[in-house]
Length: 128
Image (cartoon, rainbow, N blue to C red; front, side, top):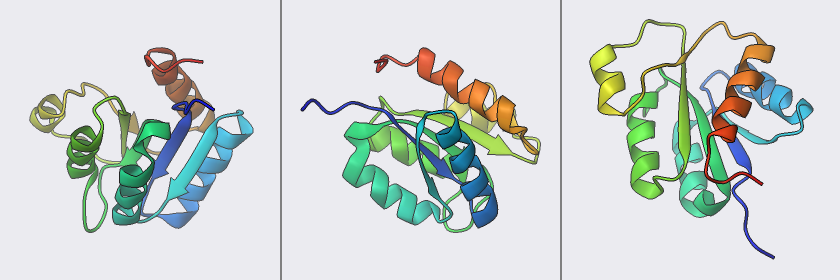
């Protein structure tokens, strides 16, 4: 069996949001896994990077923020896409440093989350 990159990881330190976003993606027939601890998510990424196509992460989190997580994901496997979410205005210089020019602004409607994730996956080289 060939390993396919089909997992979308949700990383948000608010457990209810991590679960809500994960459930919404699953309801849209996407393979989603949620984490509310970015360090545990990072361990999961290290162990399972070949199956992950996208990480959707909150910006402000304890221990490691979305900016740092984005850099670490790229170090582990630069084929994994990353989308950022934030309730705050993000610093454009930091976004440029991690090659991002956009992010999902919280509060996020589930339809917008699903649409954005599917759009990212369609631009991924790991399509089915």
